[in-house]
Amino acid sequence: MKVLLIEDNVELASSISEFLAREGYICEVSYNIRDAQDRLVSFQYDCVLLDIMLPDGNGLDILSFMRMERIQSSTLILSAKNSLDDKVIGLEEGADDYLTKPFHLPELHARLRAIYRRKKLNGSNIIAFNEISLDIDTLEARVNGILLDMTRKEFDLLLYFIVNKNRVLSRQSIAAHLWGDYTDNLANFDFVYQHVKNIRKKISAANGTDYIGTVYGLGYKFNTSKQ
Image (cartoon, rainbow, N blue to C red; front, top):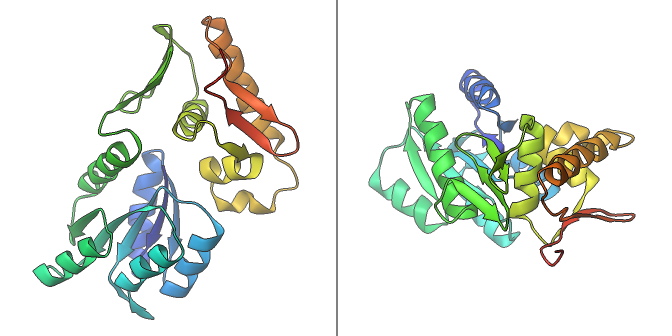
């Protein structure tokens, strides 16, 4: 999961981002509203972690901005303000959940996973397409019931393909989703090709269908019509 953390407390932001990185997230940090808005219109995120009290305004304004720009990222509010009014306003403005500071980092992790399951996987920890199934809790990928020997990045990429099936995904967007927006300035994305090649090989070895098609000049597409 790729996350944008909007938090002006540098120490807290560092603690959260380091914890999420250890849990396998790509976590990027903005310390104010202006930088957050620039990132939101430039990159895609699965979830936004949003503090309400920011140095250049009210974090709830980010929710209005996301709605105006039609940004589809999920939102989890993190705030020291424990008033009912703030919770109601945040949820009515489109937030998916609200977590009051101070909180335990494992609870944040659990809530992020719950949001992802609800928004992307219809509430299940299993996502499947035909003979391919992925368990996001155990990070196991199976084809025709056969457990595949996959790296974490290969698992995440296959999940990204299935969640976005029938959509063309550029090499750049794949790289940014799996490794962060620092890849935006790379000269080439040959490493994406190698990961895709490995996934195709492992699926085929388990007698699965290679649904990942190359869209020349653009990127790749998980094609559900391919049999």
